[in-house]
Length: 156
Image (cartoon, rainbow, N blue to C red; front, top):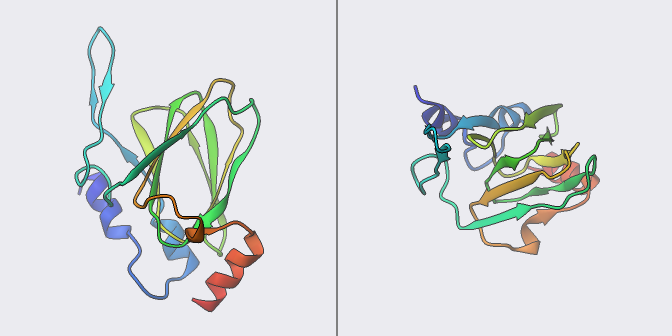
């Protein structure tokens, strides 16, 4: 089974879900890598490489070395995060434990389904984080306080 097929199998279904199931859906996905002596090329095609279709792309850059970003969950948006340059850690919490992923290569990324708290930490100097999101920006989709996130999980 390919990495993308495995990721699609782990995508959370609607309705109630235990935190460990949601956290186990978070996975690293390898992207195509075309090697060439002149420089490598990696690409992402909508509907082919990720377990969701993306509608928005944004990136974080000029983050001071050692700084943190994130600190929120998304109610319905799927995301895929890639370290385009440098490195950083993504710490995930689905209400039943935490898991840390280090991102430091541009040919793989981390899939995060809805209702998973994420924090980006330990940015190296010059890092660039690229994020593909299933939804357009909507402030109402964000849960910005961890206690509110835990209450949302308890009520699910």
